[in-house]
Structure formats: C-alpha cells, structure tokens
Length: 111
Length: 119
Image (cartoon, rainbow over the protein chains, first blue to last red):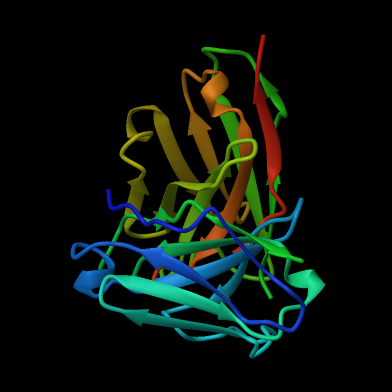
C-alpha cells in the first residue's frame, strides 16, 4: 500500500492563510491518483472538504481550496477562523483503485 | 441526503468477534455505484481504511486486516455489516461507516461508535 505523508501540525493566526501538504510518490499521486481532503472537528466524524484534488462539495466555504502537482497535493485555508481548528486528512483514490489510503493527518491550531 | 448510523456492542472480549452494523437511510444500499465502507480511528490516531463492499461487485479489504475481516450487505434491512474475528486490544478504536462514491471519496459518514476490546 502507498503512504501519504502530512505534517503533524500547522498553525496560523486568524485571517492568515495556511497550507497543508500531502506527499505521495510516483506510484500514487504521481501516477495520477486523485486526492481528497477531510476535516475532523474534535469529537466528530470526518467531513468531506475537497474531492478530486480541487472540488468543493456544496456547503464548503470557498476559503478552502485544493491543488495537486507532481507527487504532492495541498490544502489551503484562507482567512483562518477559530472554527477551522481541527484535524485534516488527505486520502488517495479514484475509480481505478480499489485500495484506500489516508494520510497521517495534520492538526491545525488557530493561534 | 443519505444518513448512516453505526450500531453494535461497545465492549468485546479479546479473541472474540467484533460485529457492527451500519443502517442506511435516505438512500438505497442496493445501488451498485457506491462503496459501503468502514473506517476506524485508534485513540488519538489517524484514520485507517478497513474495507468496503459493493452491492454487486464484491468486497475489498485493507491487506493488513483481510485475514480477519468480513463485510456484507443486507438489502432487506438496507444495512451493511462488519465482522472482525480474533480481536485484540489493538482493535480498540472508533469505528465509522461511510459511503464511498465510485471515484473513491467518502461523502457521507456515520457518527462513529466506540469499540473497546478488553476482558
């Protein structure tokens, strides 16, 4: 199984922009696998934030954006708000893959 | 909007079988397009994919759990189930059921259920 690497933690002040990286390899992201992002608020289930690299589901603010380049993907959160403090996970997968892999997760602290 | 709800015992003894059910409302489980999935989260840790079942195309399991795992669908009750045999303390986790879309992301999640393996 592939491995997706995320920084354990990031932080930023309200109003700032933070970026969370998700690094894979030439066998997953680099081979064209899509990346999806989830937000997990404390004590709650994960919530889909970004799908297929850069698409936002209905109801997700446009402060959240995703991108992919080479063997890495990124989640950017602009205009940080206190309620953004949560754990964020990337996940690889597309219609051609049967396995699902999650990144290790990144804890976002809003200072 | 589809909703999912996990149910099952919160305490399982070591070496026994962990059995959980996910009830699906607001949608039919016998749509062949979806991957009805289980994901778990060990205390203080990240998400771990367990496996999923397609209504018509079988099952796919995390290789690390495959030898102990079974996921099945009950269309008469619009639910799917997980069975994990020979559990140990390492199987203590919050277990989530989720709906996976054909392009392999999860758009709906249950609230999660805590399972503790202890004698």
